[in-house]
Image 1 (spheres, chains in turn blue, green, purple, orange):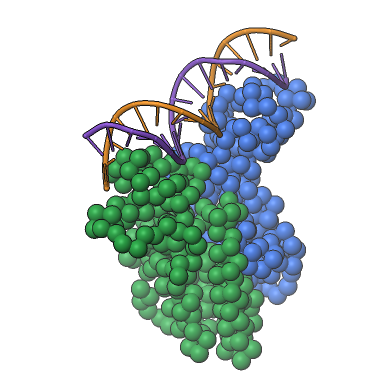
Image 2: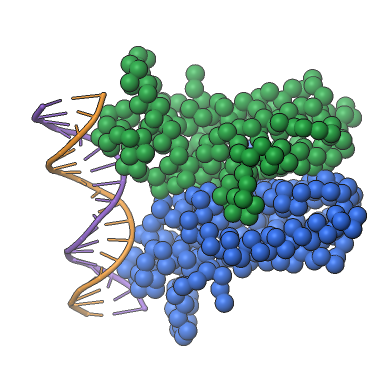
Length: 220
Length: 220
DNA sequence: GTCTATAACGAGATAGAC
DNA sequence: GTCTATCTCGTTATAGAC
């Protein structure tokens, strides 16, 4: 079951329908991530998807319906890295892996990152229930994992919430502020060396922040 | 001279004009920071400022004019913390001070932070020239400050750009994602203890990341 | 399924009374 | 300075031809 309710997703779709829905969702992600819900228009989305506005409205009954479908489509991928954080693993290894996964997602799906950022900055009007009923339990669970590492002396004391927030902040920044980073350095996470440098910088700050020393080379 | 060009700012203003302009700029910051340039409307801005749409358009000739005025109004405050980073100071102290200043601005002007974030996420169409001609020289200058600290052995080697980006990321995250943080923890930078915890967590990660140990207590 | 046409509405901006 | 009225345009959404 999808995390976002009430999304229209017919059971049987022809090949052309699947393809057109995918084209729409892709174009919609691009527009919504740049301009937010209000700022984006179905006119521009339909043109970007290579079809008429009317045809888009044949596939999705309204603008909110398109938005909800986009959200549902990217949400699972977005929450997956945190889900994999393993309480029984080695803290340094688990956190390094988590940061690498987040950087991978930020590099490969920067628009998804910006869509969520846009939504949150508006006060999360359309995803507040997701935050409260899906993200918060996961957040609480993983905060407890970190707290257990502290209590068992595996890492130095730190507020688990701030540790998670700072990791989110750093890893998502490279996606959300891509245009600024590009203007200042000429590079983005798309470039392998740049992404590798960014990732190891973040891993080093996080691990040392909790009294651990990062393994030396080559985070992907 | 303001950083944003071509802003209409008449020389002589009556008290009531000053007050109305201020009301408009305040309401406009609130709307633009939530909905972006396209998503915000002068109708809603004028209502939030307690006046008619026509009256707003008496003070500012167009929507872009309002937006430019808001940008010009907040830009200096935004760039000031980085400007104060002193090459001749102690690295640990300078970076701690910088992080504290950024957190202070994020706490006191979260909407300004979100307005810039919104603009950057759209590809910075209306501030690209500011990025290139004001921020980039400052960024290059301060990157060199950090590089000098490295070359003189005061701090461990790190890519100065990534150090700056991660500091921006962490400090601005608390403003930009305020609603999410509130949903997950019930707190925000507005609460003293929360802000203090967040600030010291960030300082600890940054300083240890470059081989320094933070002074113990009480960052503001 | 895809199109054109159009209804219904909201938004930016202007004119002119007061 | 502030208002009402209005113009024009862009947007969402629907109707109906093909």
